[in-house]
Length: 434
Image 1 (cartoon, helix red, strand yellow):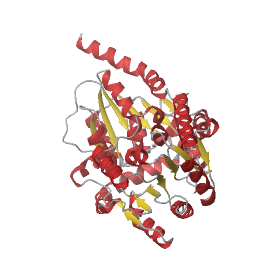
Image 2: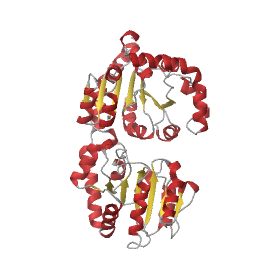
Image 3: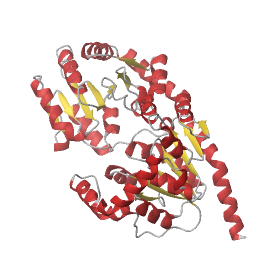
Image 4: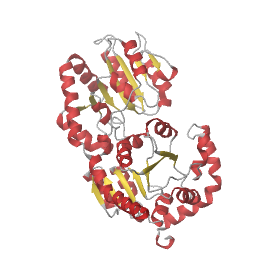
């Protein structure tokens, strides 16, 4: 294999092999920053105390929380066919989510650091029969080692932005060598499929976005009830998954709306919760009162901005606010996922930069299930109109929900693409038991 690999990949493999002894230093550094689980550090070196279950094993790798939530319905489908499922991810938050949301019998492990020694140890132990990678996780040593063992490798819910496509084209032979390791690439959209094809992926199918078939995010009923009781009859709007620069716009919009809508409460849920105190300071500089959920605070009657700087509580936020601005869209990030908010009945607003979910935002906008704004003034005008006209707001929300329904179906199409592989494993198992 080494002779056929591009120089970039040969050098990468050599450097990662040499750097493996330094992994303990890297993991210790990440542990101090709260990015690793102290009790599960061996898993990052491919070590585990868990035995591999007997029979065919389907391995699904998801980078973080969003990807893991996306594949929960698919995991259920595969489990219903009586296959053991191993799920790996790379973040502490995704591990916590896995503990709460994975079905009984599904195994979770941290993905090993991408050094050949650790990858080999992981694959030697688990011996997966099928590897499914969610979206665009391209760890070279992991991918090349899977291919070398002739383990079928499939990309699920493949997404490749125009920006990432241009970046990968700088190293065409490198990305082509990695994509050729995939037996099949299941792309979210025709545009994603075209980009993967342009980079050298040999077999591509457009199955749609699995996020559209994922269930709406749950909410802790006790916490939700407590918040609703605290807020009372106040009107609530929300800004979800915001990025630096957007909170200033949202705070300015609230300041413009405050006198026309007494008691208005704006909930800001930043994409990175550690930014909560800084957002509260932005509000105070603007002359508004703000409190932080991470400190156990609830909004008082005079609270203007409630900073929801906690993890895993967007389900609560979307159930509180009938109007939601989706972050990452006024800055050059590409927009955050609008599906969950739409499914929970929110009327959506967003900025112009939504290429990460371009097909979905285009469908929402075209149907009238969302509207684009470009600055604080336009944001305030549109929110104000919907606060005054609840019928118009509900019509937008209902239209958005119908638009989501028209885009659904990716789960069935994905399962259909995986069925030939699963059927083969079932036949092999019957042969072994004969």
